[in-house]
Image (tube, rainbow, N blue to C red; front, side, top):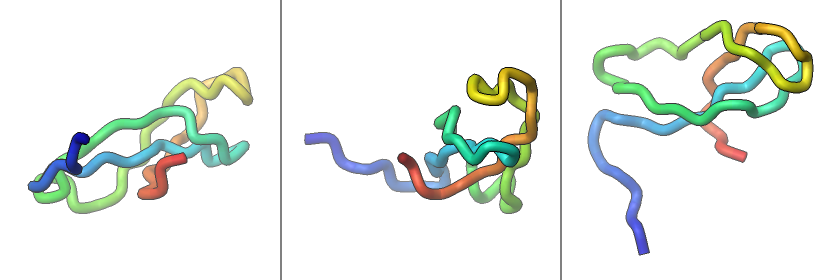
Length: 59
């Protein structure tokens, strides 16, 4: 069974700020970028590029 990674890399989900759907899973180095990410990505539900915010919960 695989164990969770240890270290500065942290996995998280990107949640659409318009509809609230989790569309992307990515990771970041929490030492180099301490603030939460906000990226403009394509949302399948909204069918347009919207702002996606970092959420620690993975669904």
